[in-house]
Each structure stands twice: as C-alpha cells, then as structure tokens.
Length: 422
Image (cartoon, rainbow, N blue to C red; front, side, top):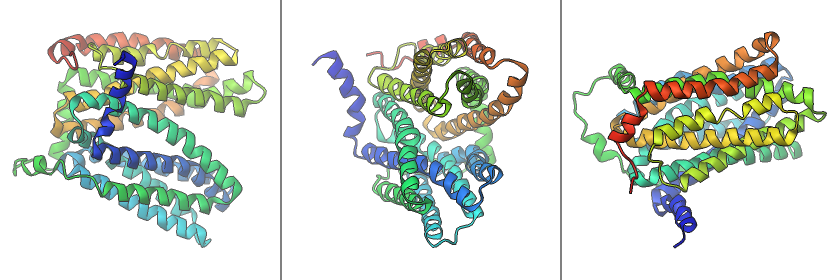
C-alpha cells in the first residue's frame, strides 16, 4: 500500500465506527441547518422590521446564549451522560425551530420569536460541543481522534459557512423566509432522530463516579484549577485568546473596508476572500487529519497559529487580488490545522472526566475575546491606517507564539507524553 493511500485510509478510518458515522451525519446536518439559519434569520427579521437595530438585536441573541452557558455546558457534560445531553440539545432545538417555522408559515411570527430561537440555538451549542468533545473518546480509539477532528474541521466551514448559507440565500430569494425556516427545522429534526441511535457508551463511567462528588460550583472550580495548574494548557489558552483579540477584528471588520478601497466590486471580492479563508481551513483540517500526530505536537500547533498569521502582512501591503486570496487561504489552512491538533490534544492529554469543563473554558475564552476584537477594530482604524493594523496583526502573533512555547514548557510535555510515535 502506498503512503498516499495509507494517509487517505487513516483520515477515513473513524468511519469504521457506527457511532462515529451517526455523530458525523448529525453534526453535518446540524451545521448545515445553522448555516442556513444565519441567512433565514436575516431576511425574516427584515421582513418584520427593516431596521439595522432590530437585526443587530436578534443576531446578538445567538452569541448571548452561547456566552451565558458556555462554562456551565462543560460542567454539565462532565456530570451527566454525554449521549443524553447531545440528544436533549438536538431535540429542544428541533422543537424550537419547528415552532418558528409554523409561526412563519402562518404569518403570526414576531420579532421576539426569532430572537428567542437564535438564543436557544446559541445556548444549545454551549451544551452540545463540550458534550460532543467528551463523548468522542468513548467512540473512537486515541489514534483515530486526530482524523475525526480533522473531518469535523473540514465539515464546519464547508457546510456552515459555505453550502448552508448559499442554499439558504437561494431558497429565500426564490420563495420567502418561512420555507427556509421549515428546512432548518427539518435539519434539526433529522439530526435529533439520528442521535437517538447512539449507543450508551459513557453510562458505565458516569455511574462509577463517587457519590460525594462536589456540586456544580465545585466542579467549575476544579476545572479552572486544573487549567491554571497545567502550564501547557494555560499558556495555550492565553495565546489563543490573544490571537482572537489581535486577528478577529481586522479580518471581520477592517477587511471589507480595505476591499472597498482597492476593488470596484467590493461585495463580491470580499465574498471571494472569505471563501478562500474558509476553503483553506477545510483543506488544512483534512491534510492534518490524514497524517500522524506530529511528534512535537504542541510546537507544531502553536507555530501553525502564530506563523499562520504572517500572510496578513501581505493583505496589508499587497493590492493584487490573487496575492490576497492566496494569503487568506494560507491563514485559513494554518488556523484549521492548529484547531484540529488542539481538539485532539484536549481529548488525549486531559483526563476524560475533565474534558467537558476544559473544552467549555476554551470556548468561553475564545468567544469572550472575539467581540472585544470586533468592537475595538473600528475605532482603532480611525487612529491607525487599516493596512498598518493588518501588518501588525500578522507580525505580533509569531512573537507571542515563541513566548507561549517557552512559558508553557511545551517541549517538556512532548517528551513526557509522546503520542503516536509508532
């Protein structure tokens, strides 16, 4: 068997597990539905109240639900059956979206209904993903987790940022938002039914936990204490949150203005640039998933994230569209590759009874800094030229990556805990 064939087989090996196939299908359909909802929600709000303020308020609902429950989602995942959490979240979301679809089809929907649906979807994600991360090690052997995370890393941008919104736009354009809402509800209903067939894999471990286990706040304190006292984990979170603060705003807020200054068809050009970023993320995820976990896995991950921002310098300096597309593709690929390694390390280096809490803390830190970055990017551009901000955003993360590698003693962890060395 050739090396190329062996790598391809490694990437597809998780599909040998029945439960993983079910999970992959459920997540794929759910992500597609969520991506479509982003478009349906916009046009449903505009049909009710053609106001940027109304749209902003409703769109904030999803982020608010995610933010408020992100930490407690991990505590719940570590205390209860991951399978039941996954099923419950899918079922409640399906019920909520079915109600929205009925209200929209009958013409009785109001603005607060759409906002409530977005809030429930955000809150559901806060409970779903820690449970999913903690459930996956029960489904697959350790050596297949990298491939599984790579497959998921490719699935999310392609379905959630690509096919879902694209099809949502077509359907809403041809018909009206209510039809899109019906399809979104159908996606969540199908995902719910699929999860019902997952096996009870984590019940034995949960029942074996001591009866004198601390309460919810005790669990939360234990999770925070574990992160703070685990140097590689703490410094990865510090570095990752710094990265979100430095990079997210310039890409989401300043890049559209830079595109408008340089190109005539700014809207289409900006769409192409975001597509290059998303495609890069999918390819980077798939590429890493087809390989063995690097021997120096933490070093590889940190350098992917840190070094992967360097092409932003070209975004700031270059005026050629091809160069900008290539630069964003590389940024996306490096980011995607690092995220796949990160998800795998959480599942392999963190104690299985702690994965949910650590995953939710990671989630919380990430989403806490993203809106801050977006909020300060605009005012900062009034003081500093946008190209300069992008150049700085490309140069600073590699420096922070070197600091994180040293402060987190990443090399010592790699020597003490070798993974996939054979």
